[in-house]
Image 1 (cartoon, rainbow, N blue to C red):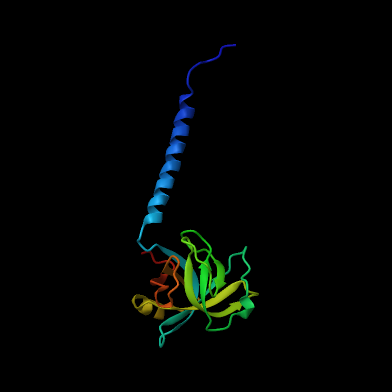
Image 2 (cartoon, rainbow, N blue to C red; image 1 turned 30 degrees about the vertical axis):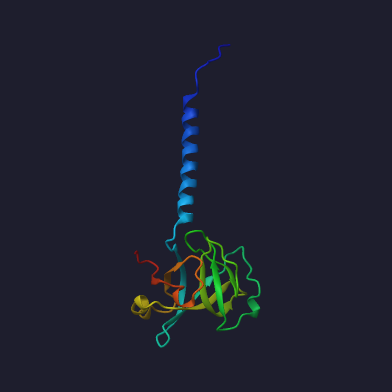
Length: 172
């Protein structure tokens, strides 16, 4: 039986590439963590109604399938709450709804007014102010239109929780 003493170069190359990728990922994360720039994320919901007199819109979004919203029965129309989306860079469903949540730097949060819940708490209707730049577009949408919103991470200010709204299929 012959034993080769050659170094397995493909394995060493692969290991080196993996280590490089891991280190690059950590460096990128460290740079992001130190950034003072406001990080934005996008969320999607269905337009229920738009009130031109107050420039507010009511949207409906689904609660993430693995979540049960604590205290949902205690919320009434008009309660100011923080809605937390499920997701990392794109909101994919509601993860939480609370009066005083503890946000984390990765929180996809949105200050809302609670309107109602439907289908045994699987859908939440919420009201948000519409930014002046989106009033014309939103006023032209029919109820039932899917809309994409843009918000800052860890948003807690009712007046600045939504920075942009557009039709779901429109590309920035």
